[in-house]
Length: 307
Length: 298
View (cartoon, each protein chain N blue to C red):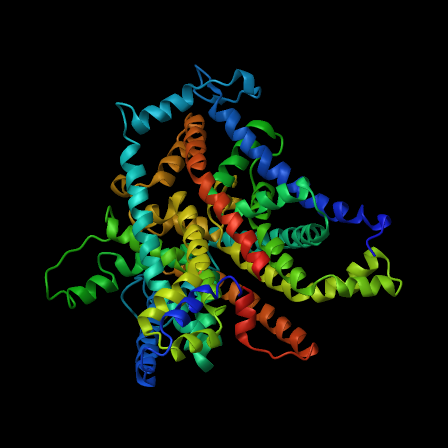
């Protein structure tokens, strides 16, 4: 705050008593104008997806002409529906499995690292933190090619496939829990832990019984984020996949979207959307329960703000 | 309380992640270097990595370099195109995201939680599904053409989905704008209302307020948001593939992807990737620095 207040001070200096006060009306007009832009933006951002969801329930084969409501592409079409097309089922199962495994490795790894970084100073943790942050902005294709080359030319016995995909996803997602948990640890500070130690807790005991519970919201938010982001991943899973059994839903959309697919593709995408929505809602409910226990106000904004 | 007995605990907690990062982030890049500076099997045309840096060959790099700036420079148009597309997309994202983020931070009132949730919604809608949505809308008999031609009355025939640069740039904006919105919102949300009130009381006009208070204070958010979307766009090949699938709209990412999926060109893919990363290194470090600063400030 102290740094950034400077421009305001400049205005204070310059306009002391010179200009008349503004009328409130112009502020209302501005709110109205900005609100309109926001609504238009949200419509542009969300309506196309809503239409895709809608057409997953189309009776006919078209993805642009409405031919009546039906669950045909989910259940009863004998060959093309999600239920009866084995490749779509495999893609769905594989995507969700990858998300579960990758999340359950990424989050503990990142949380432990954030705890360590909070106190461990030196070149090694700083360097590792730098590399982890780089994964946030490095083009995903770079990481994917690196791992692809490593598996193909160096670690040849391991081979491409599900485990290569998991390793790639964890590496790419690791920065989320690290950054989110570190920010939370900074606000927690060290005095709770010191108090616990003064009262006779061991170092591990203080971390386990004092710090980890306070870190819970950050862990929850990062788990939710990582899970949703892994469901979405395309570049890494594609380069590190081996055969049809390691195909994900995103790869399937990439391969068939331009080749006149049926609404079953929309149905598959909708199912993944439902899965990630459920996980986000679950995360939000757990977060709210935690806040209530702490006696804090519960609003959607603070959960979303943490994302 | 930080006695000696607790010291080894922290390195032990951090060790698994460090081993992971070294093994699966550091080593892979070394392998990329060894493949890019390696040789190609004369018979099978498969790349042979050279593990010893002292024996690295520059033939692959030379091939890529020639295609970039040499007489045979067919990579160059894609590189220029990428820079133009990314510049337009990032600027547009900023112009759209700023008013939206500003509204959410200052004027949304009781709808704030709802608007925020909707702003974040694209995060949990898969990127490919969002591109699929536009393919559905923009296909020849899709909704967009139906609306434009008013149901076939007006004979306009726009080919949106093959080689149309407008569609690709729109797709980039559509795909990446959520990542711009959040840092921008965070920066704007941090501006205290009393500061704005003070500036107003002292006679700052709306323009003064924007230019001298809000804009300077949102610079960290603008920088972080721009880098956060510009850098991944540099390696993006799937947006162009999904919405155009034409060499006329190929970006750098498409060149890299094409070399990867073409047998025998892995070395060139690696060499091209290294050149791209060298150019992007400075902005990537800038991002981690601005991130660290924001951490200290908050």
